[in-house]
Image (cartoon, rainbow, N blue to C red):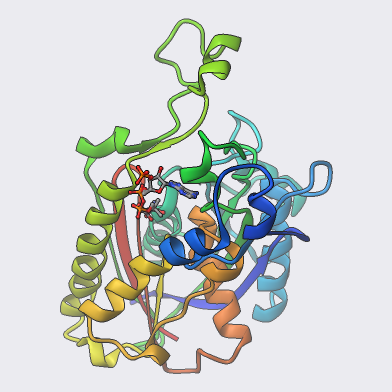
Length: 332
Ligand code: UT7
């Protein structure tokens, strides 16, 4: 029986730090409002000409490779989660493959927004369990600062989202009770329009024009309160689903890494699952919500900080636009 173990983790964030105070120069908001509602203190914004979604993923992947003691040529497949690909097409997976100089290996893009990394992990895990591939690079990378508008009309979203990348190397193992124990993924398209970026989509003859830009129709929209309500229900549900499937309890979790959507959501999950502070890892304070990158970015930082030890039970869970949600349980 094959399983996938996490052989290495890495992350990369752009250099430019944007504080809440900086945002107050562009819109009517305040450090107090942002911190109180989201827990965010600062985030990173990419630099044009320096950072790209595929390039940031490559930077994160190189660290993951080094920590795993592997070479890029050991990678059999790339699974790339992002809602902000370098191009409309082709996907960023092939660009990352080109940067890593791995012509021929398959590269798959996953478009599941905040749950993108969990979906990507789940897909990669199936390829390893089936014996098809031995080593798969799974990345989440996002540039979102240029989708938002730093203005009053864009403020409900632009204070939350940030840029960054994280990577994980999955490797085949036959060791018992090690690596990914399970993944569970879900979707409910009923709520597709509650958190979305509609344009430029294929629905209209004119994908975008000046009038749409002026009206603010090229900006993402979010029904924040509804997303919040669903998130705090789905997170605990899908975490329990993972624990039940493995006959484990919340007390068995050594570290929960929730998708970094909002610190208030993470606190709600912690409270509803009765987890101690040391059982939950959050870094949204420094990076904001980095969508598909948030879990591998947090995983990599938690690893660097010595919060994850051999044998630990690590639970990852996410919820986001779609709605899509999922969890992964890993024995480190
Ligand atoms: O990654 C997964 C996807 N996203 C999420 O999980 C996000 C889930 N939702 C949330 O985190 C919260 O709903 C938000 C943080 C987005 C918003 O917090 P809220 O407590 O739900 O605020 P609200 O949208 O109800 O807005 C409250 C007030 C409004 O003013 P009025 O109508 O009460 O006068 C907004 O116009 O706050 C106003 N507001 C702001 N004020 C200062 C909205 N954005 C801002 C802002 N600064 N940036």
